[in-house]
Amino acid sequence: MNKMDTNDQLLLDVRDLKKYYQVKTGIFNKQVQQVKAVDGVSFTLEKGKTLAIVGESGCGKSSLARLLTMIETPTSGELYFKGQNLLTSDHQAEKLRRQKIQIVFQNPYSSLNPRKKVGAILEEPLLINTDLSKDDRKAKVLSMMAKVGLKEEFYSRYPHMFSGGQRQRIAIARGLMLEPEILVADEPVSALDVSVRAQVLNLMMDLQDELGLSYVFISHDLSVVEHIADEVMVMYLGRCVEQGTKAMIYDSPKHPYTQALLSATPRLNPELRRERIKLEGELPSPLTPPKGCAFNARCRLAFDRCTLEQPHLVDYQQHQVACFYIDEQRG
Image (tube, rainbow, N blue to C red; front, side, top):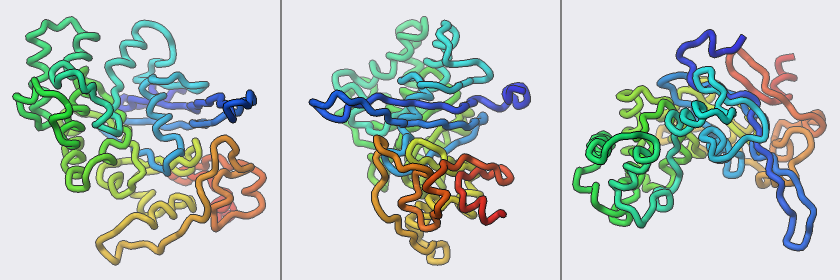
C-alpha cells in the first residue's frame, strides 16, 4: 500500500533516490568513472516537521537538495508530493515543483542577483508563476518582507547594501513568495556570523509555526540541528547510515560515524560533553569508494565483514542503522 494513502499529514515521500555522475579522470585521459553522489536515499517528511540531513562535506547533502527541488534530475528512484509523482513531465507536476518545494541556498552573498533590487528579486517568482498585477505583486512582497523582519525601505535597495544575516532573510523571503509547503534549506546559516545564526534559526522556527512549513534542513553543524530538527538523517558518501528522531540520534547514537560526529559537538555544560572519538584518515574519494562499508577504513569497530559487504539500513524500533557491528551485538 502507498504510504500516502494512510497518512494525510505526509507531504514528501522519497524512495531509493539516486544520482550518479559520469566524470572524466583527467584532461587528457578519456576514461570515465562513475560518482555515486546520492546512492539510494529514502525518507518521508510530514507537515510542519523538520528533517535534518547531516554529514561531512562531500557526503551528498547538497546533491540531495538539488534532486528534491528538481534543479537536477535523479538517475533513478521515486519522489512523491502528497501522492503525486514529481518525476513525471506533465504540467501539473511541473507546477508543483515550482511552487510547493522551494530552496534557500547556503551563501547569501552569491545566491542573490547583484544587478537587481530586492523588490525585483522577490517579485520574480510571482512574475513567472502567477497572474498578479504589479501593485498586487508589490503588496505581497512588502508583506513577506515584514514577515522576515525586513523594513519597507529595503524594497528599493541592492543586495550589496545588506549584511549577511539580512541577505539570508531576503533569500528566505524569496523562497516563501510562492507559498510553498516544503522549504529545503541548504546550510542556511553556515556562512553567517555566530551571533546572527540564532536570529535566522529563530526566524525559521517562527515562520514554520506561522505558515505550517515543513523543512529539509541540511547542515554539518549538529549543534544547529539540535535546535531545529524533529528527525535526523546521517549521510556518509551518498548513503544514509542512521536515521531516527532527534531524541534517538542525540541520546542514543548507534552508528560509529554518528557517535564520532556528536562527540565533536561543543558543549558548554561539562556534564553533557561526550568522550571525543577521533576519526582516522580523510573522507574517501567518491571516485574510488572503499569496498564493503564505505566507513570501514575510519571505523574503530570495523571487522572482516565490513570490508566485504555493504550494510543496509535495519529498523530497530523506528531507529534505522546501517552497521554490521550493531547486527553482531544484537545477535
